[in-house]
Length: 428
Ligand code: S3P
Image (cartoon, rainbow, N blue to C red):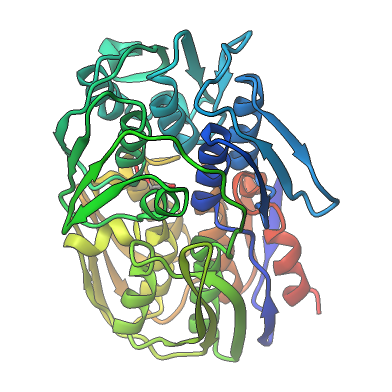
């Protein structure tokens, strides 16, 4: 499928974004493992979270729709899942594969988790290694580095482990396994990443001690937890950049999660001079939340790297679009993790923005963008990557002339309503 996008005269109004995908995966998985019945509200309708729900159902968890909004009632299994009849399919979702692996490592049966073409090329050694150290027997394709992965659950013991990358998925995988180990587990993180799992475990009665970047997880049974999921800051970031780069914009996005491990995009855009304001800050489901107000802005180029990268890792494609509109040069470095996301996001965004007239150079760990204050509409492709499709959609909203995004259906993974919302502005 393809989508035509062009620049509307104005971008003024309120936008509703889907519920936070990261929190949604965790709400489904942790409540499925807990003792008791929970209700989870505000789930996003994208394919990734659906993949987690279907895998959990395949593992014997009873999950029912409560209403037409898609809110779910989950009957917790008290940690005892049931062997799936076939392979589990995580589809495009790395979070599904990595977090479920942690939960399956202590089960008394063998599971196989597979995924789509993109997921089959994403690194899994980062979870296979620590789970094996804990006593599970986990293997994967290509010398235990790629999916599909086979998890023969076992009696686990705690480990002390230093994460090779600041990955919330790997950290969460180990934390899930640690809940069912015989002794506590210590995780050393190289930098802060999103801490949704830690927060949810706190709310569910687990004992997790944090000492700076170090976590200690104690084995225990979880209590089910009702929650309403706040809006997804990663989805909101597309509107943030659209509003900032459009000359006549004022956008409001209500009730967005502003977890400290996710707000790197807000910090980066503000350091570039963005008119971006947080209002009505409050806490919901153990997560800080706020309304976000965005206005047209004059941006300057900045250098982005180091500890900021894990806190805006998913937003770099759209940040590159903002950098095209900044005065001066933006350098994005220390971001080689981008090469192992749903696509190689360094090379794909550089290639597609070049088609739109950007002055952008690829680096092994990032990119350098010389802002020209404009982009030119072109025919571009998503590589089947939802965030690339949406970043290019934003580029189309602020570029001169028409942009056609091929493979636009990729947005279904996290934000199926995206093009309909864009059309509301462009077809006014
Ligand atoms: C996620 C963590 C990030 C992010 C992904 C979702 C999560 O991955 O890119 O989209 O929900 O934990 P890593 O933690 O592997 O960097």
